[in-house]
Length: 313
Image: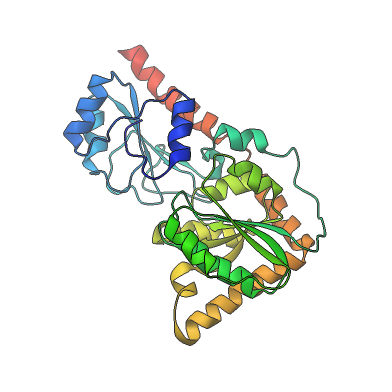
């Protein structure tokens, strides 16, 4: 793996447990090619919003098969193959070169093995267990915002919040839970799939964790925290795979608009907390959408594309 893993001890531990060495991330196209040659790579997967888009073409010219992960926009990369694992993804400009849709969702072993054999049944509970998490470090500070919205529902709950940074935990300590509400901060963990399967409701960002939630059949409510999540968030909510809580800038806004956005999100969450039937309906649709075999499909597609070139050489 080439890149940086900063302030994510659990991710560093995951790499170490698998015996995957971590090397500094090449930044320029020339450095990418040099790294591929030094390590005698046949295939390189590019997953970055920051790399020079010319890197994919440089690798192809050097004979290295390149798979680029994208979110709708290829960013001008000239890769051999593209992967857009967002639900309903499609492209008319990449015919034959795009693996599109959540059937190609890349999931860890711990998620796949935790997938239940069937969608979870409706269970009425007086104090639902709620899990809230927003990426490894919660770079946009969503946890305190959504914790306040959850508390504002007034519904009893046992809320576990994954805290990525000390300043996030400090904000959470300033929030006073209501009657029958417990807020429990926990550090980032490699045991997230277990927390998800134990929860009656999950509140999360509408990023790649969406496919983990679907695979595990978790009843979920999502918030769009960055622009590149907007299209996927809209499709997921429209098809009933998760409830929508809106966009983070709206929920943090001031004035009448901000209060209205937070009140709407609180009503949505209260409806889910008080209705096991609603939670079950979301969970069933989510579970049926992502089967956990996406990475095998991606590997097969790469091998199918690489083998003819190898035979021809």
